[in-house]
Image 1 (cartoon, rainbow, N blue to C red):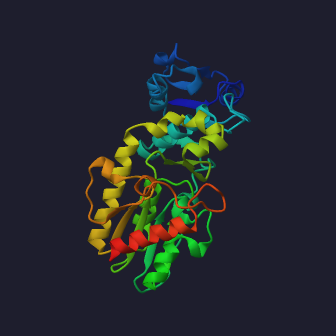
Image 2 (cartoon, helix red, strand yellow):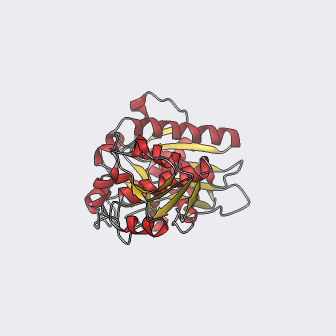
Length: 318
């Protein structure tokens, strides 16, 4: 029988393991191949990184018959600026995987705080009526930052069409976030969806029960973000892949459900990617030289620009 206590590289784990078995032994990179029946204690910090794969550490965990999670009062690598500990997060991740997928006897993890599904799966809004309605999806521009609620283009379109409207919008959000909101919302046959496509250089990031919308502004306002997700991540080509495939998922979803979809290129121009959708309208600043006016925050489009958006989208709808 092999019992392994798993925690940090400090002395607390040794004390706990030896209280269980005075002969408990530390397992490290140097001796992990020699473990046999008995009690041991270890930490991911005692092993080589293996480019983030931690093969040898996982070998020890998989050999164990019983794994006991033994967290310290404070993790040795805790970054107090962002409350982040790699040793803690990776240890919990590996122990939960072994418990759930390899049915290991992993103890003392029932009190681990798991992600809050409520905050993770929260929808920006709900359906407004049992009859056909309008939906608006997108980022801060579609949300109406800088203008009054009745001045945003979505509200102008709703007024013109005489339809109730729901806004699946969030400032700073990504195409991936908007696609997820659309696909999980209660859209029905006969509805109209206007999706204001934002920039590709954005992504959602979930941390400690909070969904962060990572974009260039997030990095300016939160120094810890660059430590956890380097800003270069925003400019990797796979974000284009995710954005394009997310758009196609929504197109397919709306076609199957008989929802009328308008793709409005507000901060992304699909024409750059030789994508030809009959329901696409380019509203990028480059298409009308510059924003006609700015909102009260001096950063987002103002009432006249929203009016122009509404006119172009209504023209496409008709």
